[in-house]
Length: 327
Image (cartoon, rainbow, N blue to C red; front, side, top):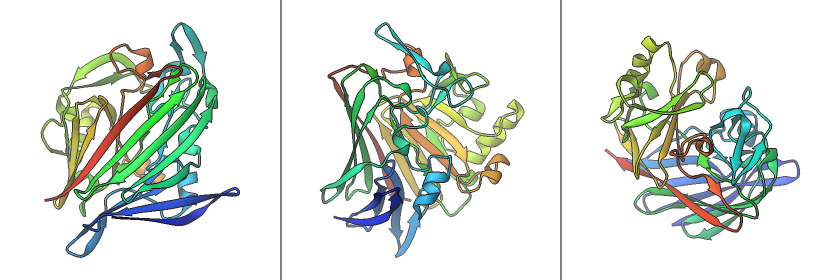
């Protein structure tokens, strides 16, 4: 195993670094200090390199592209209804950034920060940052994120946080997968979920769970394009949905390879997009699928969505895993 460090540009006067971890199989992951971004996931098959995630090779695109490509989202991933919540009897009103709601915790979240980073071992990198009262969230929070890659081609991302004030913590990696030579519509998806979250016209959870059926039934492998086709009678053209999952959350596969996703929380959000071409995305010409492992969106406002409260003086740790397999 080897970890290499190189420059990736600057934000103002702050240097941004790229860390590349490579294992004995020549599988590698690359991580940026900016937004603790998962910049690349590359495998070598029969001497040929294959990138499995959407990525950019320059910092400017990561800064200007609105799709949060590969970035760490936090404190809280997903939407919060009316940009408000209550913790232990105290009410908080934040500044909306998605109509009257809050999306991905606002405009100063972890996805806009440059982390301190260090090589932790011969197969891991740790990134750390402290945020204080950003976007109206209470408290000062110290966040550590550890990326690792083992010789079994499994990527682990562990999120740790502690705070001096009762607050919320529900981070994710906004990674977009495109793992095959075929179009994303021809790639197959399996989600180990019997239920998904019902949402209103603003994509805010209603509090209800719906059974996974028809377009939303990925309990057996199904082409993503088939699911999109099944959405058309509902007058819908994209996936942007949260599924209730267990430890082995999902698998995405192409003709050549697969990635299995694992989590210690109970949510998986999938989102069809074309991060490199907004116009094509608007025309539903998708290039990749975001797969965000997290607690369910707006959990603070729904008792059975998972606990996202982090109390003062406490610490918490979550881990997501992504295992590559050649088929």
